[in-house]
Each structure stands twice: as C-alpha cells, then as structure tokens.
Amino acid sequence: MAKSMAAKDGEAPRTRDAEATQKRILAAAKREFSRLGLGGARVDDIAEKANANKRMIYHYFGSKEDLFKKVLEDAYQDIRAAESKLDLKGLPAEAALEKLVRFTWKYYLDHPEFLTLVNSENLHKARHLKSSQNIEAINRPLHNMVQDILDRGVREGVFRAGLDEMQLNVTIAAVSYYYFTNRFTGAVVYKRDFMTEEALRARIDFNVDTILRLVRV
Amino acid sequence: MAKSMAAKDGEAPRTRDAEATQKRILAAAKREFSRLGLGGARVDDIAEKANANKRMIYHYFGSKEDLFKKVLEDAYQDIRAAESKLDLKGLPAEAALEKLVRFTWKYYLDHPEFLTLVNSENLHKARHLKSSQNIEAINRPLHNMVQDILDRGVREGVFRAGLDEMQLNVTIAAVSYYYFTNRFTGAVVYKRDFMTEEALRARIDFNVDTILRLVRV
DNA sequence: CCGCTAAATAACTAAATAGTTACATAGGAA
DNA sequence: TTCCTATGTAACTATTTAGTTATTTAGCGG
Image 1 (cartoon, rainbow over the protein chains, first blue to last red):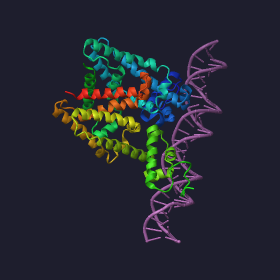
Image 2 (tube, rainbow over the protein chains, first blue to last red; image 1 turned 180 degrees about the vertical axis):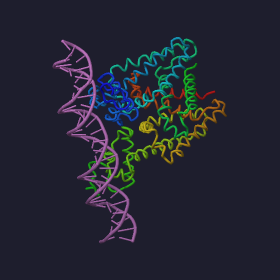
Image 3 (cartoon, each protein chain N blue to C red; image 1 turned 45 degrees about the vertical axis):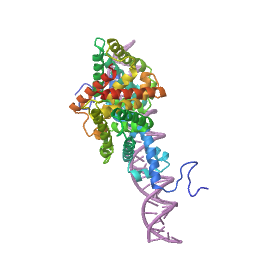
Image 4 (cartoon, rainbow over the protein chains, first blue to last red; image 1 turned 45 degrees about the horizontal axis):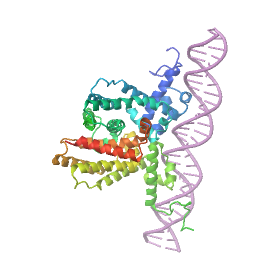
C-alpha cells in the first residue's frame, strides 16, 4: 500500500501540505465560480473538488466572498503577467498592436474562466475588486503598453493623434470578449456555431481589421 | 375604506386580476434576475416584490427556470420591437448605420437589465433560449435590417463589399455592450467613472467612429 | 524520539430555499 | 341568488447551504 494515506483512486497525495491544499482550493474555486457564478457556486462542491475539507477553505480564506476575491485577483494577475511577456517594444506600432489584439483573443480563448469571473464581478458591481489593494499596480503595465504603442504609431506617422488609450483598450477587449461570452446566445440568434475553427479564424481576422482601421491615419 | 381588499399602505390594488398579477410577477422577476442572476435571485423575494404570493408564480409560470425563460424571451421581444420601429429604409446607408449604432447604445443605456439577463443566460450556456420556440422569428428582422444597410452602402459606393452581417452586428453590439456590462471593473482598472455624461458622450462617439471606419471603402 | 502546533477530518447547526398542500373567496355563469 | 372555478393566501416540508465545533494526526523543532 502507499506510504500513509487514503488518497482515493488516482487523486493527488493527501499528506499535510498547506501550500498545495491552498492551490487545490483556488483551482477548484476558480472552476466553480466561473462555471456557476458567485451565487451559484457551492462551498461544499469547491471543497470536494479540491479534494480538501470545507473547514480548510474557511481556515485559509475566511469566507466564500474572500475566496472569490482571491480567485479574481489571481485571474487579473495572470492575464497581466501573460501580457507583460509580450515584449512589443521592438516592433513597429502596427505590428505591435496586431500582436496585442491577437494575444487578447488567444488569452480569452484559452482562459474562458477569466471572462465569466469578470462578468460575475460586474454583476456584483466590482465590490470585491474595489476593496483590493494591489489591483491598481497589477493593471498599470497594460495602460503603459497601449499608450506606448499609440505614441509610437503617431511618431511613425501611421496612427492618428489624440486617440484615448482607454477607448482603444476597451474596444480591443470588447470585440473579442463579447464574441466569447455571448457565444451561446449568439449561436441561437445567428444560427451558427461560434467555436468552429473556421468561425474563430474569421472573427479574429475581423477583429484585427476593426482595430487597425480604427487607429490608422 | 377601499372597495374590498387589504392592500397594505400605498400598494397596488389587490382584487383578483390574473393578467395584472402575471405582469407584476414578470416585472419583479426581471428586476431580481437581472440584479442577482438566475442563481442569486430568490423566488420568495420575487413574490414579495411583485406584491403577489409565491404560489401564483408556480401557478402561472411553472418553475423558477421557466419564469426566467419567459423574462428572457420578453426581453428579446422588447429590444427587437424597439429596433423595428427605427425605420431606416429612407436613409443613406451611412446615416442608417450610425442611427442603428446610436440606437443600440441608447437601448443598452436605458435597459441595463437586458445586458445582465443575457449574461446570465450565457453563463447557463443559453439553455433556456435554446428551447424557446419563437426566438428565431423574433431575431430575424435584425438580420434583415443590417443586411439591407450593408447592401445599400455597397450600392451607394460608400461601404466595402463582402462584409459579413453577423460580424458587423456582433461588433456593433460588442463595443457598447462591453462598455456597459464591464463598467464596474472598468472603473477600477481605468480609475474613472464610466457613467458621467462626458464619459458616455465620448464613448458613443468613439463607437460610431469605430463602426463607420470598419465598413467604409 | 518526544511533544506541540498547524493541518486536516467529520459531524453539526441555524437559516434559507424551491416547491407543495390545504384552505379561502371573488365574482362571473346559470 | 347560487354555485363553481380561477385567483389568491398561509403555513408547511424536505433539502440545501454557509459557516462552526469537536476531534484527530502529521511531522518539525528541540
């Protein structure tokens, strides 16, 4: 028999490991909150799927709401970390912007839970994020990155002057975000599958076109 | 004393009126579902806020899920009805398109509950809409309207040929929808109020610009 | 290798929740 | 006027739920 513990068929080991338990809880919480929303997710289910005890959730995270807040902060942390690895400094402005648009698309495609978590948070009027200390610092690099691309594009003579970084950023997010989060009602309203390879390719190309046309002189 | 009934201080009259009761239930359900989502809304609260008895909800609508489905169908019905009153036939293509973009913006601004209901439905993978009989017919006029504008613009020589009606429609919705539904996290991330008069004016102008640049030759 | 603390489990509680049952009555049809 | 049924009320039930309490135990510092 195995070393010491009752790890049921194929599950992770169950010796005492605070860090690992917290990670399992966070992973399970992210899945449940994104699948069902803050109101729909169940603490018991999160505990079970984390292969942990419910008591540990309250021990490490305090309450369901605080757990949600941590999951959300981590999700923002993750997308900003991925963005900051893009390294667009060396590219011409147009190429940099296209790369950012395609990155955003790909990130949403690969991390659908980010979208539903943000939706859930907005349903609750961002009350968790509002009380978050580090969220401002987490997002600052994104603003700088897009502002730099805009400035560079103007200097290169390819972008219009006076564009608002926020408006551009919101629009870049919008054209991808909306497509993904509303893909289910979209499938009904437009009578097509939004997630076929062909549909995805067509949409990201359309989005790149939308954004480049928006900024070009 | 009043005619017959125990209407508590200032409330609506309480004589028997099936139609009025159903309307009050639907109005209260729309408010609660949009405020809290399908999972977060409470049947008891809906009954209380409708100034009705919970039993009536089950009598008229069958279940919480069926009530949600009816609320959602009505919401789609309402936006399509408002759209169909636009009468864009007489306008040049560009003017027609701009009017549609501004209408969409204004409708979302005035009916925020539509946005959260649609979000809630997408969280549930559109399972209510999927089983809805009339939803296809409800949405058809929208497709025709936008396709007509596109065709007209090409004939007028002001729009590019070959644009996909769905991509355009989705983008028109996206740039307004995302701004509104994500205005709470947006306020935190961008450190500004998304709902001031000035911010709203700037965004709708930006959106009109985005869409017109997208379609122009 | 001992003992203490942090990690973990299981069983419990009080409140909330979707849905039901039993009963009451307004008001139109006869 | 008298039924009869659709409209409405109130109290109940079986479950579920977030959060707690009581208890056990792994494994590190000494």
